[in-house]
Length: 486
Image (cartoon, rainbow, N blue to C red; front, side, top):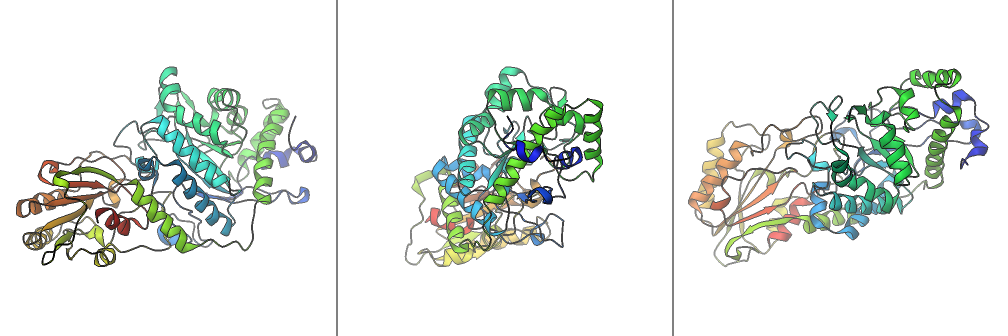
């Protein structure tokens, strides 16, 4: 029995088909005569990326300001479901202010390779941890009446050739590793939508994989929501609809709507199947309509403080020789703080999840407000250019050699990891490695702070006293680091 049989029975075939694809990049279609409105969906997993109406390009300057929370690779290291639930609620509040009905996250794909360019956007290589964190995220967002989209279903563990790659995975590995996080999140939290992946799974595109979308997701796991394609992931719309894909995003300009109509008329698609797809979508749209809160305002400062708390709870102390941390004030001594990441931190990844932050807290200000006496040096060019590299390193060493301790901020710069490509190496920028090695030769008490969303080689690890991995800690990562260090 369809949940919205009364509405669907009043629709024409063309109206039913029209609901199965987006109106544009971010909106689902409406049927005004039946009281079915359009609703809006937006990225992303660690912050709301609502595009400016006049600018459709991805980029920090092209979306409304929103809180940039720590990325999934960061939050997973907290192992704190309650904290991620609160983050989900905060994200939902920002959606409510901006009239967004579905937030496109979280991503729970497995980190099969440390080189995947999008690893920062996924929780873990551990399916249990990824599933628990994903479920908590979904529950938090949806507790406020905003939907989520669990992604990318499934076997999407690389960016290279992601549109055409074929993930060959045997049943046991699928069940125990690659599907487990999705299963846990679906069963525990019932996301409004599940987003399928670009790739093929065992020879069939995920968007038209009947076994994946119908037999496993719906029949075995009891998923009640709608399956939506990743943006541009549809290969064969008719086959996909039969195989359980409810919604194509973004719009096909009416081309695939016409194919659906023709397929029903020719008997390739049973109209009852189309009705089932439409029923799921009408349910999402009406839930989104019912939960809208015009005039809602979230607390910008409170969300920034929550982002800072999450960043603090998610950092990992990799080494602390001689208990050099926490830093303590010693009269007449200073700590050398080195690295352009202090003033201009690496706090998020690149691609469709990029957020225009409401604010960026300064590490320099946070250090100056701490009890520690500090002096600063840039250490390297933040853009990654190696011009004047020797001069930067010389300046840093001159500062460090008379300091009681040296805190060196390094990590992966923006062009090292992103959606759309995979890394070719696990190396840090060479200038960052040279900086740590040089400072270690003039100061025996070096503390390294890493910022980045992927594993890296640390050839200098034995030469430093402490290593703190801050990952990609969101807009408040800098004061959070200072809190942890002191």
